[in-house]
Length: 58
Image (cartoon, rainbow, N blue to C red; front, side, top):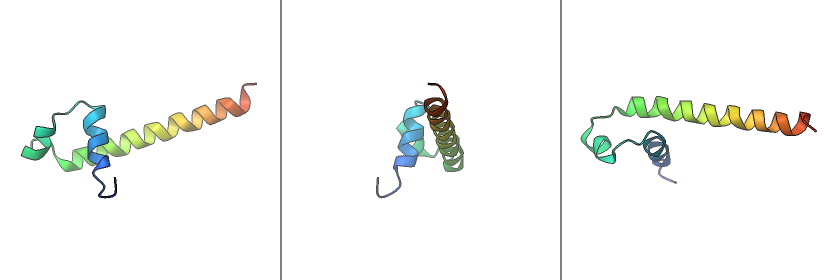
């Protein structure tokens, strides 16, 4: 999303967080950012493994 909110919604969806908790401030945005970084790193690692397998398992 152009406004950057996809970071928040990606984490909200992945961890099944209640959006009301985001609006109320019950969930710290620094925590959201850390979870987003973790999810991004995990996706990157999975993509690297997939590419390696495709290149090496023939």
